[in-house]
Image 1: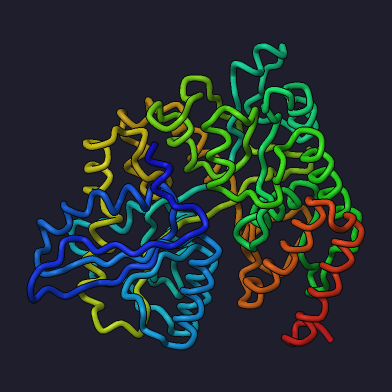
Image 2: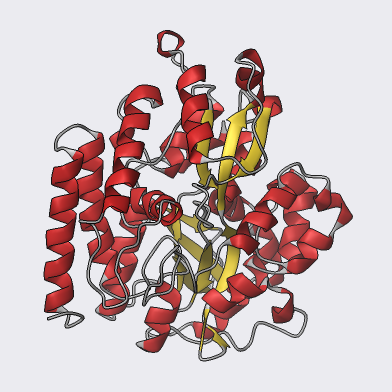
Length: 435
């Protein structure tokens, strides 16, 4: 299985065919399946750019964020191309840590980028990162298990339905768990899921005056719901599971439902990778009837750090990897189902791609996520599954550690929320948001 190439929790470095006298780009990227696939297809880039070699530093998500943030903040200059997300781009662009992408080529077609994705990767109307793939989140579920239990998944389920169904289809004796959800601590791991979920429960990180809200009943309801559901219907060791771990569980037939990134759809339906490829259905992320669904908005994107000496070559690589031609290349080599989703309008207008069972659900999920109004009640921040302030990277991970500990049974839900409130309040006072 190609999934084994992800080398979970580790990093690896690979160099694509060194050429005498060539300029070498060092690319920091995440160990997700689409990025692994991109590395396998770089012969196409090399053929078009024989004077550029590629050196890959491939890292687990939390490690990538830590290394890249440290390097760019200290102007370390280790990397020429960075894989970063929707959270970092406007913050880092404002700090002049990134170079604007202004020479992607005449045939690149920036206007074809999906408006919500492009907006999230721009600062002062300039594009500072090009999206490799865009995503929201949705429910992926086992149609065979639902059928056996006499259940029918609605296109737009409630959390109550999802929880009830998860408990009904759980069969722990046979290692079938009704639901798999992120538990691994990290602002972009468990807190991506839990923040998006909390939005649908009426919770928010801060009120309009930047006061932390973890002492409010909506957060208590969110965390109680999550911990109890995972205790009843989740897999063992869930507090260590992030995106890749849950992907492996679902592909091996151990999850009845998985609520996670829409980009996972191509992997769970790939018969070469998934034992349940022909038994997967899709639904919108759940809601609680309050007007917000528990889905997020994200793009893994390629950007150029301001400290690089190889900006021209770096922009050539980014233009190749995020172009319409690259989508055609993947379709030719791997099939339309495996094309990186969620970046271009033209992809969703393509009749071949429209046949893919998860295409419409993906674009509907992306279009319904609203970074400018992410919660039921008003908030002073933008971002659906994150708060777009520099302090959030540290804050989100610290809160994520508390919530992961609650999932593991090391602390109670009340203790985790109390700690989250205290540490968030302390940081917001220190940073000058509140007195």
